[in-house]
Length: 151
Image (cartoon, rainbow, N blue to C red; front, side, top):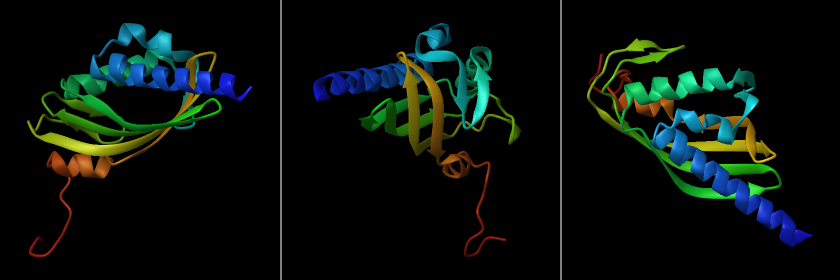
């Protein structure tokens, strides 16, 4: 029985790696329904595939070279935890629902992310993440933190 669970966990890790590679790194939004359930919970909010497609397109428009590197993965049951490095160059307008419209800075960023996915029947049904958005915005020059000698 333990062997069967391991096969599922290995497969789930492959699905998540492919999600990062195909959808995020290559921008293959046409493959979204291969990896994500029609209705999924993203940060505790029910989202449609159309919404998820728009989110990917928004990020890839702002950062055409957006790239997730999966540094480490752990699978337990139907959940996969992925520790990632995210990089990109801000070459397009970034229309974010909370930050507003950010004009391209031409600057590159590198940050760490931790993502937790729950899968059912080989598709993502729930996603949570801990992201270094502040670090990204600082590297892009959009947010400056006060420090010694800064007003």
